[in-house]
Image 1 (cartoon, one colour):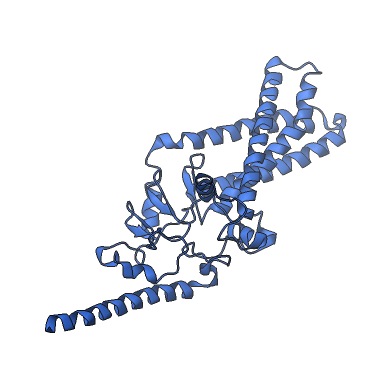
Image 2 (image 1 turned 180 degrees about the horizontal axis):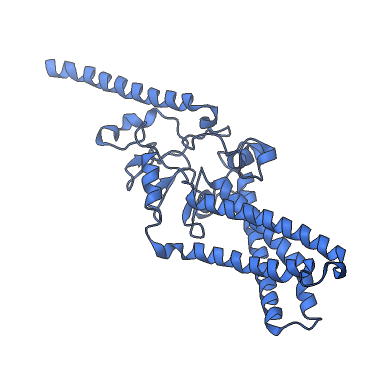
Length: 331
């Protein structure tokens, strides 16, 4: 945990890398100002006496404004959690440290890993000097190994990994809802601005906001559809790219637990809370079985037993090697 705190404290060391985050916030502010001040207030008719207001438009204005603020609030919360939540990394110690004593072949036989080198040895990171768990990859931007790394996202200035993957998915989901709401409901106000005597500046600003919202809707819907497909197939973006490089099939993943299990691995075990930033996925992100639930979700006891088996295997191999050398010395 101390290492994670240090990584978070140095995350914002380069101010230039915050520019994409600033662009995202600027886009949110621009669309908010247009939708609230030019669309919602028009429907609420705050410039007219109450007896002259059209009740249908006022009711519609309150409904749309309430939905817009609720969705935007959830979007901003998930954006903050994506930025501030550490994605998870290989812990210090616990059998994952790469040291000269542990770099012998005996270490590789203890922990049951799916991903290994072609020689059968455990994967390790030459920058972090640690063994890599399954689905773990090193991010050269963050300079850390990320558990179940999906990708590095410059728009949130963070890696998307085991601990913040749900927040990232919900960020895209709420962004889609917000953009669809804006682009569909505000079109009426854009059309209204071309039929009544309003200033040219207001009409141009409304058209710009409507065009921006429509364009972003297409992008976000496509992006969300891709991530829904990845989630249903138990794949991360990194694993998808690896399959494309190897020209392997995209229809299956060695970590697939069925569609329901694959969704639970990202959005958590409670379906009623899948679309809320609550009930994060279970497990520790360190160990993953073939076609089964993450071993961390079954408790930390199994992972500890694997590590203890690894230590016992090293001791047994060391003692057997010492016994085989003794007759040679006596001879």
